[in-house]
Length: 63
Image (cartoon, rainbow, N blue to C red; front, side, top):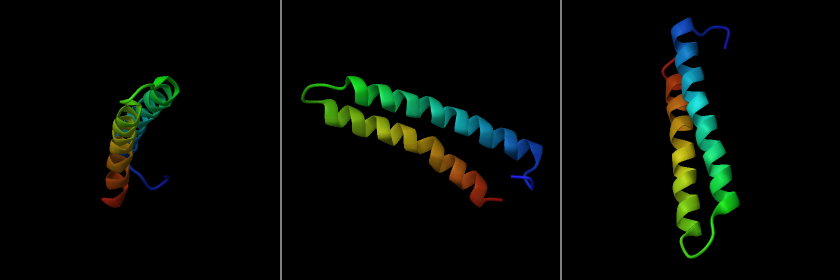
């Protein structure tokens, strides 16, 4: 990451903070999901967690 400019680094760190929040939500969803909709809730939480990681990947692809 030494070659990243400060703006890109801050943007990437912000996106990764969002990713961590969503991973925490995913962990809690897996821990508490019950019943017929548990699979659906977990899949949605996985999708939500992947989104900021994909954005971070795109940021790095542009560099």
